[in-house]
Structures are given as structure tokens and as C-alpha cells.
Image (tube, rainbow, N blue to C red):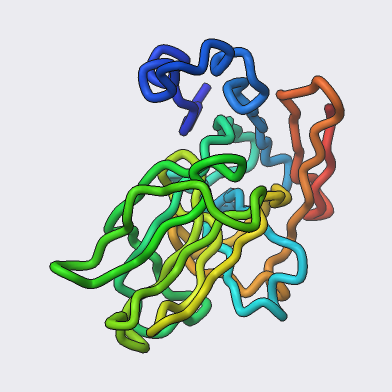
Length: 231
């Protein structure tokens, strides 16, 4: 079975979190996975994206986070797997337009409860500063430096070193991201990892729910081109 994984090995997590003896025991270190099965009559790209509350009014955009590396023919299946390791990301995008592509130029580690704040600057080249503790705790915050031009860069958050939610960067802008995202699966065409989405037009899609202490679920696209979840 094809498994596409962004899960971080526990040994690597412990090396990065020196001094945190319980790091491997936290829920963020437990891999989540969703198996997707095509029982429809059509060929599709299956993909997974994240969504934040009030996304459209916040001028933020979801990205295709996972995408099947091949066309999913009827009867095909694959699994996406990840751990909830947060990141900050930036990319050269000029304007953010649904259908465009976000291709990260850098990804740095982040933690909503500790290292939750970074600065995006263009000196000496585009970069994110090492994340530090900031306010408000529990959010992920990016400060754009005064020298950041308009209509050139975008910044955002990611998971597994892959971008998930982004916004346009500009001089002295402050971006506060809610890390409490929801997971959504979808079937589509002409998409790939990093495709910028208009979430109002993504269909067929389904929010994936992980019940308490459940980390592996299966979702099926049926003959009616509707998704169903089987915990």
C-alpha cells in the first residue's frame, strides 16, 4: 500500500527537543493517518488540506498539503500520515491567487506554546528569524519587517515542513495564525502539493474527524462521488 508520510521519527524529535524528557510521549509525536479509497467510477487526484476558522474573512489561504502522486483510478487507495509538528514558511508568490502554487523557500520549527513568534525579513535575503516565545501564547505569529515589499512574498504556517495556511506578506504586517486547524480531504484534478485553494469551491470534500484516542481513520469516495468516513 502506498503511504505518503510527513511524520517525524521520535529519535529526531528528541534530538531537537533536548531537555524535554516527555517530548516523545506528547500527542504531537503520535502519527495520524487517513486511508483514502476510490470506490467511485472516476479517476481523481486525492488531496488533504487544512482550514482555519473564518479563513476567508482573515485573508488567508489553504494549500494542498498532501496530494496523491498519481491518478487514483477506481479501486485504488493510499494513506497520508503525519505528526503535528508546526512550522513557519515563506515563498515567492507575488500575488496569492487560487490555482497558483506556493513553493516554500524556507521552513523553520515552531511551537504554539513556546517558540511561536518569528520575523520575516529580506535582509540580507528573505529569511525567517529563529522562533521565540511571544504573545499571544497559543498562536503562531509572523512579523513582516519594514523592508518587505508588497506583492512579492507570502508567509504562513505549515506542518511536517510543508505549508498549510498562507497570507500575503508586506511592510510591517502582523500575521497571527490559529494553529487549531481542521483536516479536510478532497478529490479533484490538476492539483499538487502547494496548490493555493479557494475553499468555497473545493468539492467533493469532507472534514476528517479523529475521535478521542483514535489516530487512524479510513475515508471512502463512493459511487455517488460523496465521501464517507469509517473510524
